Length: 223
Image 1 (cartoon, helix red, strand yellow):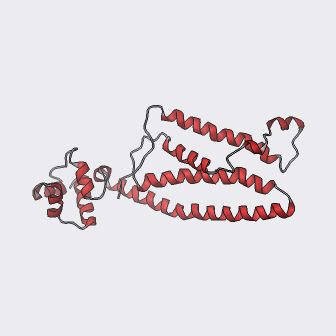
Image 2 (tube, helix red, strand yellow; image 1 turned 180 degrees about the vertical axis):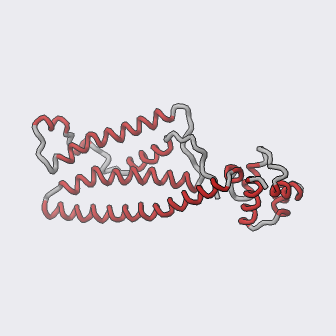
Image 3 (cartoon, one colour; image 1 turned 90 degrees about the vertical axis):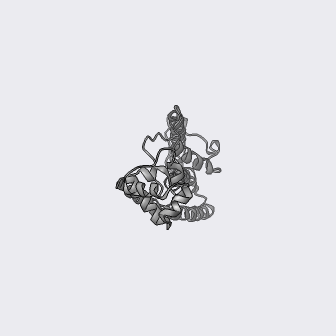
């Protein structure tokens, strides 16, 4: 039995339908389905999409080997474990920012609160945006763009993200240490940055980094 035949039988059994029912859904003879599952013949390229739809999967899954399907299961398991970690980190970060805001109001020491708001929170949003798209790619079978010059956009986004940190880090450090006179030229006023007041910008940027990420690997099959 070929991999395609094994996969057709596996997904049909998982869906809980008989060979006769699958044949009726595809408007083909029962013998054709039997031949597929026994490895005597294989579905044509034109038939694969309708066969995959009938089995609630995709053409990649039907053509995948057992190793590919196992890799897909493991990757989905990893993302399911990471999801609560990301959510817990977000809750912890929110509580920490609330505590630092209270600390700032009581002591008038703005350093920790501002540094968290300008460095850690944007970083979390960017990571959350990238993770969200990775999650969609894993479970919804989406994949990065494959346009000819998409890598140029990806590099420009990386430059934009790196530029933000290059400019904001000296400004955050100036809250804790005294800069020499020459260092003042590298410090930019905080009101120049709009990202801390609009962290969703970093979320979108993180998502865009995944969308434009050059990835020539075949997408994981839908189980």
